[in-house]
Image (cartoon, rainbow, N blue to C red):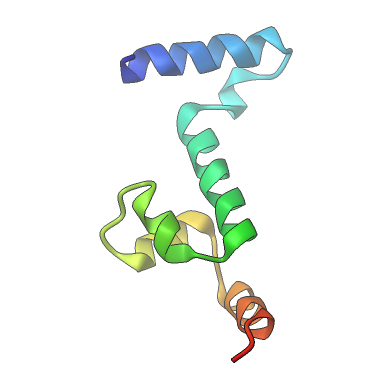
Length: 79
């Protein structure tokens, strides 16, 4: 399936269930999945692989992760 075909399928599916296709694009859905995985696992290294980022800093910006997220993860981790 080509990129264009998958984008068309997403557009058609979103429209079919009554949502605005301008708000649900293939990239935003891809980003949402990565954010959900990050929240569930806290593993930013694994998330870096999904969008193909070469630098962890790009992944942090992509996810909107911040110092608060880092502190929360640190508090949950026992040594």
